Length: 205
Image 1: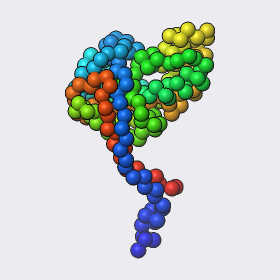
Image 2: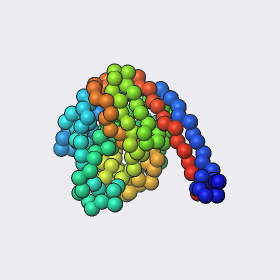
Image 3: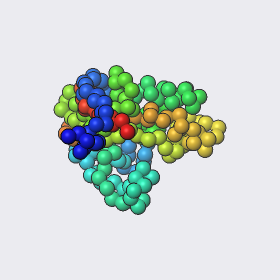
Image 4: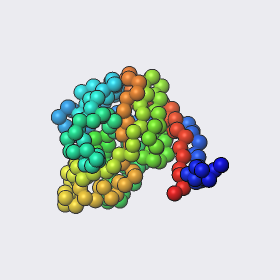
């Protein structure tokens, strides 16, 4: 019977779902006209994202990350929230020979602590905040030269262009993730987070 459905014979590795615990270590908001963020004590989240934030809105315009659309195509905004981890930024800073990389330099909205390998959280991961907010991870955030230039300028690097080009290499798989608001509310600094990583499966091809 299986020979009639040969694809069913291919081995599939199932990775079970799991739960992790983290904490909202720091919160940031970007002015409506600027990429860089500034620290705040709380984030007011609606279905459009963070109220007044640079990346807020139900839709956005496609760019280099969506080569399957003409640039500027209106599409759903699944990049409402930028999430990073301090330990991963520390690794990137070391690779770039910098003392630090501040989250606000790269437009981060949320720094999460105690979640290992944050940037490797898969799509569909749910972040349940103790106050009631839920965020859903869309994808890993790919590092770009735009953020690299911001780092180079803020860190006072001698060669701004070289710094901009170095960041995408140094931050590969360490740039954090982007997420969208599944359940709105208010997130406060220091708030506990329950992280639900969904079941995953890997096809052997």
